[in-house]
Length: 126
Image (tube, rainbow, N blue to C red; front, side, top):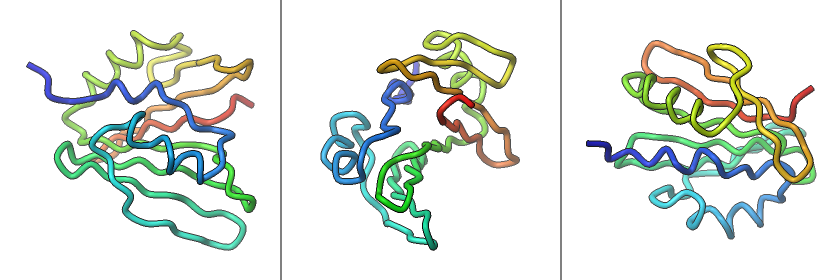
């Protein structure tokens, strides 16, 4: 039985302005609520949390407020489930990297393992 909604993993907000993200977040990521906006010089980010599933999504923004990358954090015990989900949706580059094409752009999805949580980072492919 799975109560986890990893399905939102497919929604890519890169290139969208923070106001578009705010408008579309509820539909794309049900259960996530706005936590805070942090501004650090030219960079800033929007933080959304899902307290029930203990997940966090960060939308990293440039100085104009456009999303340049996304990071989604999960509990580390979800590693195999997250990897299965990524394998089912994207083309695998290696064991921790996947490739995605959306709206004519190529993206790289990287899974980073930490001690307590894992992070899935989506960014434009270099």
